[in-house]
Image 1 (cartoon, helix red, strand yellow):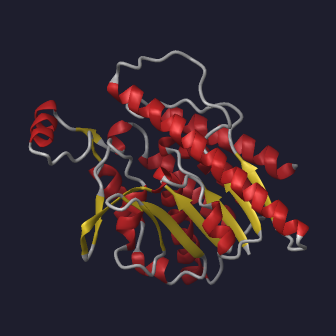
Image 2 (cartoon, one colour; image 1 turned 45 degrees about the vertical axis):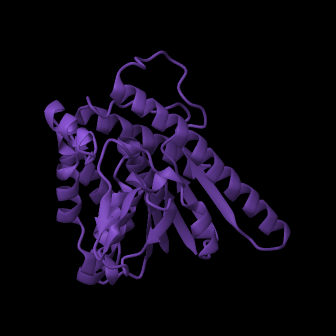
Image 3 (tube, rainbow, N blue to C red; image 1 turned 90 degrees about the vertical axis):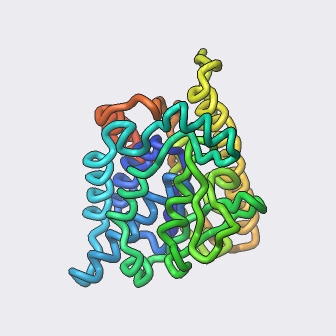
Length: 298
């Protein structure tokens, strides 16, 4: 079973888009695509487009699927307001005082984009296995949802909802449960993929092995939040990859042939979530394609 595993990374997911194009153009045709956070969004889009082609054309052109994902990013994600808008200080103050805090940002633009481009019926009828991870914050449980789950699109929204910056998402018929970014617990969903039978894995992470080594304004709340998130995510994804490498090594010693290729940036990606342009997105896509191309050529 060929598996494409897409890790989290917020808007650094643009790097992932470029790497995905390189991987799919190399001839890799996944049977399963799993993702957390922005990886969940990219995974869902890929499965949706591949299945749509299968329904309409009776076949899937993975080159075309990767290009459609690239077009989605270049067309729709050009500045911060395409993703979220900042809440007013008055609203934040009142909501915090009244214990109804709902995130520093309003992610309605992102939610509208996801609902516009993803059709639950198409995803539900796919032959490609899809799983998207989110964390149920009241208990702290990791939940992997498939398109067969009721209200699947809301799981995708939840997986993309950055803690503190964006509000928790409620799932239909679960009013007492609230879900957030799956990257809170697992950045790269390698463990669940291996347990589901993946034997040939390509994992695309958005974080380099090492974190930044440069000064930043730690008294700016947004920049501090972003840095804390990066440090945490960096440690989590390193642990996810290390666990998978050890697991595969042990299984190979037992005679079970498993293999995994990890594609990730060599240096930390630079993108300010609150101040970026379409040029920044294109830059990361091109960087991801180059790193991905070099990796698949090896």
